[in-house]
Image (cartoon, rainbow, N blue to C red; front, top):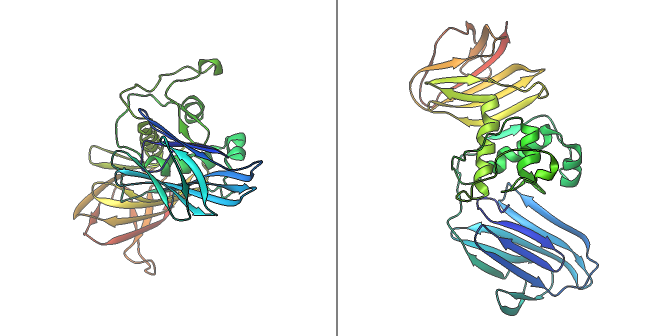
Length: 309
């Protein structure tokens, strides 16, 4: 998927296909193979997709990005490359670009992050082979925030089955489930873009670690057993932003940045009866009970640790 859009990229050494639900564009490249080191890369920090490798004509690197109402395909590195695109022929020079008219890019200014203690290099063939949710979910969580905020009537259920049912390649959503895999489930209705399932995934993953219900914030309400270590930052709620950290499946640190004034209702994990609260990291702080009220002041940051049973 192209981050911040409902469009996707399918890449071959001599063809880059950009497609959405209702349109498809093919960029034919006059390159001579075999192409060494051919790579398709999704950069979620910079919201771009890159296609690069080394043909007989030399090294090349394309960048695809959705900005405003335009998808731009540019040659970032390499010599001039002749091409055929949208019924036209031409020569693309370094830093020149081709355009596709699209809908507005999805912009999410506040991004939340998840880490589950895995720092291996994300070669997606190896990630797919390992199938470890500790590697996959943080990426899906981040990518999902760069998709259209739409409710999709899909029941996710077990996350590992959901991933096999609805995704292939580099977290590319599948509209129709391949029943030959022996996995049943709902297809994505045609009125929803493929990107909508990404946002649904983000919401579901988030609900494992933090939820808001009836004015109360639930901390680690459904922490899966395999996620022994983890950290989340920038979790935005109606009254405050939260950072969470847990070790050996037990809450270790919480940082709360107040957005409004007034009491903050929190439902703590069952193994938390008391904890220390500080207004500054260097303070000694005080121990309080889980039933004690935390009263917010806008702009104040609260540091919580020493969670005890």
